[in-house]
Image (cartoon, rainbow, N blue to C red; front, top):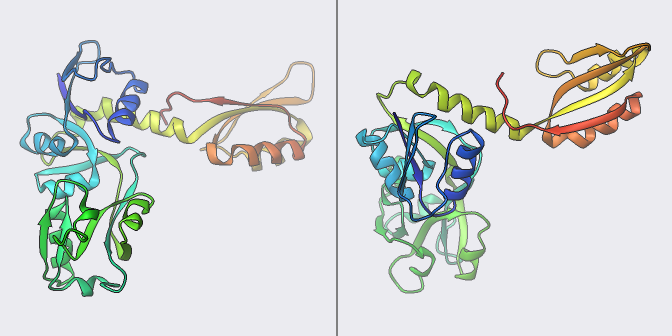
Amino acid sequence: MLRIAVPNKGSLSEPASQLLKEAGYRQRRDPRELVLVDERNGVEFFFLRPRDVAVYVGSGTVDVGITGRDLLIDSGVDAVEHLELGFGGSTFRFAAPTGVATTIADVQGKRVATSYPRLVDEHLRSHGVEATVVRLDGAVESSVRLGVADVVADVVSTGTTLRAAGLEIFGDPILASEAIMIRAQDASVEDLAIVTGRLRGVLMARKFVLVDYDVPGERLERAIEVTPGFEAPTVTPLHGSDWHAVRVMVPRAEMNHVMDALYAVGARAILTTELLAVRV
């Protein structure tokens, strides 16, 4: 039975469970539930602290887990990124009061507060910068005002919290993070084929919609230029006419532009349908 670690709280918890649910796996109804066995799919879920997921995967206690790329790198465990999951995006940045630092070189000799000490220390060393890394469990933006640090390094979504604390982001991003599925370094990829295929199918379905439309025969090729699909669209002659029915996958972000173009070409009865899962 495959063992999967899932974040039990935090910003990654609900999206991770939703993704697994859409992939056909049971998910817990009670947030206090720590273990869930999905007999039909041969999977056992363990709901763990997001920061602990990588530790359990790296030790081989569980086969795979869902966590953030930043948490994986900071853990330093023997686990690797297996699949990007498309949610929980953020950047990891340095910030300091105005005039304190504008480049990473300015961090030399300073105190850096962060909840990700290993990640920050390795990043500083890779740039030849020596600084004192101060580990905090949270609210690092308050560390400068309280005299614990000169600079902070933290996850940034909008930067609003940092600006409210009188800090300005500087330098290049330390890391671009998102939710990922991870596995042990020596884990068999073949053993993960089913869950990997299911998740990829859901992730692709979220990026595309299915478009159906009817188009006159003399305008069919122009319509196909608008909607070429992966290999080719499915084209079916309509009974008793020179019209054709076309079915094709279209990127969700381009859906309305594609419908506009199809209508201009002469297509009619243009319909879009949500996709639940895709295998290509």
